[in-house]
Structure formats: C-alpha cells, structure tokens
Length: 176
Image 1 (tube, rainbow, N blue to C red):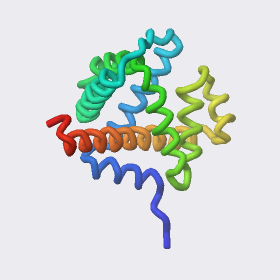
Image 2 (cartoon, rainbow, N blue to C red; image 1 turned 45 degrees about the horizontal axis):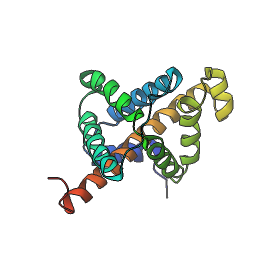
Image 3 (tube, one colour; image 1 turned 60 degrees about the vertical axis):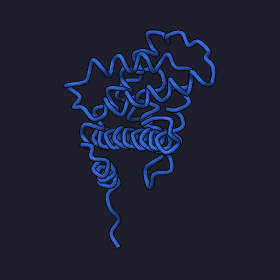
Image 4 (tube, one colour; image 1 turned 60 degrees about the horizontal axis):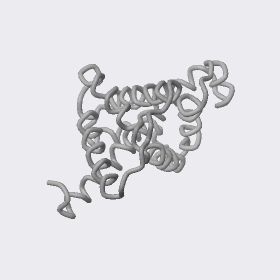
C-alpha cells in the first residue's frame, strides 16, 4: 500500500479545519519570524500573575489567535504583530510553543525533522542558510519544502489545540 505524502496529510488536516494550508503556513512563518525578532530585540517583561488572571489571559489570547488565523495574512498582519508582542509578555507562552513542538515530533515520518527545522530556523540564534541546511542535513530545495510542511503542521496543531481548549471552555460553561 502506498503511503500518503506527509505534506498532503498536513494539508488535509488544514482543510478539515476549513483553513487554507498556504495561509496556515504563512501565519506560522509570520508568527515565528516576529517571535524570533522579538526575542533578539529583547523579551518584554513578564510579570507574574495569579492562576485566575492567567486563565483569563489564556482564553483571551486563544480567541485572538483563532480569530487571526481565520483572516488572510495580508489582512491581519498588524493584528498578528500586536498579538505576538502580547503573547511574548505572557509567562506561559514558551511552554505552549514547546508543548506543540513536542507533539510535532510524533508526526510520522518527519515530525522530529520538522521540529529540528523550526528550532534551528526560529528558536535559536540566527543562522545563515548554509548553517541551516547543514544542521538539518538537507539540501536547499528539500529544506524549504520540509520547512513549509513544518510551519503548516505547527500552525494546524496549535489551531487544533486552541479549538479543543475553546470547546472545553464552552462545554464547561466558561465561555459562550
């Protein structure tokens, strides 16, 4: 039996959520790039907050993310920049990114490679293209194809996580 291409499976996941895979990829790339730029420029101060305030903050940020993800990138770039800056100020944001990245590793057959590509591209010190290709042991064309798949997978996984958390809150009567 012939196996379905991993990128096609990722696209199918996006389509099931009624999202355009290209837009999901662009949103993830924009968010990761802004995240990386903000980390390089210096993290905003993260003040400790109570569990109750943290829960409210998570719900607000989740709704903002779900709303932004439904718009075309060209229509929501300013919203995305504001969202990323707000998210960087949240003491829990790195934990959520790590959680999704860890889940990505389980996506067969290239999940671990996808995680490595995103970490090398956006979550570590700046690297040149050649450094990225060498670190991931990929040629240029393969690297960019795999990174597109990785960005799309990250985007749909965080979307699915946010959607499921939102549904839990609706089921528990926390939100409408």
